[in-house]
Length: 156
Image (cartoon, rainbow, N blue to C red):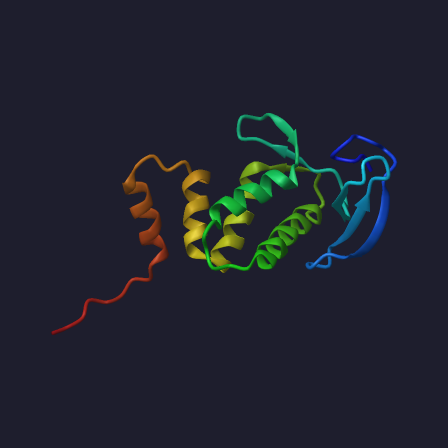
């Protein structure tokens, strides 16, 4: 593993343990060249996934990109970081276990929205506003009204 500080390729593992979500190994590393210490995470990757964009373009699946978009939607929400990590790992496992290496971006977006809806409705609406490309306040109003159950009018 290359040292992020000096670029030395001969770093040493000082400590290994399961990460909090138990789907990764956390390794504390030390660089003998510069004395730098850093942490890496090792995850199982079942297969290389390719995302098929709506315009037909193909790109390699990027877990960090998925994580960034989810964390942005969850910003300042009362959800523990460990729960977010578990959700992201669950989404990736679900994608990897679909049996296909080519996955439409629409499928990924739907899975993310389904997961967010179970955890936090505000994050769900935030993500949906970008994913569904809301253009005006009416788009939010229509989307949120679909989330609310219909209550019968109260009789006086």
